[in-house]
Length: 306
Image (cartoon, rainbow, N blue to C red; front, side, top):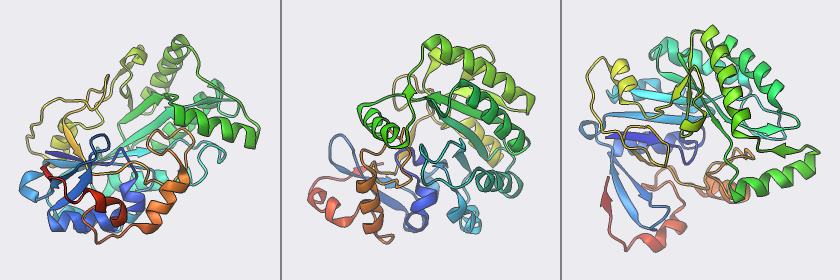
């Protein structure tokens, strides 16, 4: 089983100690976000194929590479570096610091450990098409040699994203838009060309309709990449987690509404205040990432083996 940690929140940045304790304990309890049930994810070494981390800051886990290596399972880091203005991403680490972490992963873990995510591509008056071409090109040049893949997707404007974008646009004086499919495909083709110049292939996450010339479907949870890192054959079924997703099957151990980064386009957080409150109430010793008072009503329900 491939363990995803996590597309629902940033575990490396905010919950690294919890993850390390869960890895040593051999299991984690996770709440199904739709059925309101707790299930048990088996994290014993013999049951884990590998880990896929999703993060904007791997620093807290970089300080524990020895513990990750000692577990004896390969891991991939899907590392988001967008370098957007603070009005859009108020609390992420600077791009230089993120790039340094990616270079360290390539040097100390494996050249294919880190995958760069320029994700999502958001069109605003402060991040128009020209911004993305210049910004992506600059980041790609600085990441050359640290990764072989750049993943993009175009922002999906859910109701909560629209609400957050509208409020920030009024507060900071910018406008945003959701351009045509044709405009997105044209930009994807240009970004693919820029990626190639710096030794990367461009892939598109869960949006095959934008896989323009030079771009491919992304497999963010990728058993093939994990196998190359481990040097051993690994098997897992292809089973995406949403329409358009081309990933291998995985089990996610994160929780929604727990990432306090505050990025305006985030689909995993309804309100930053809720995420901050949950982060502050978090207990690293708990088997569940959610605060215990929120998990309490679920304790009488059956646990499902991961």
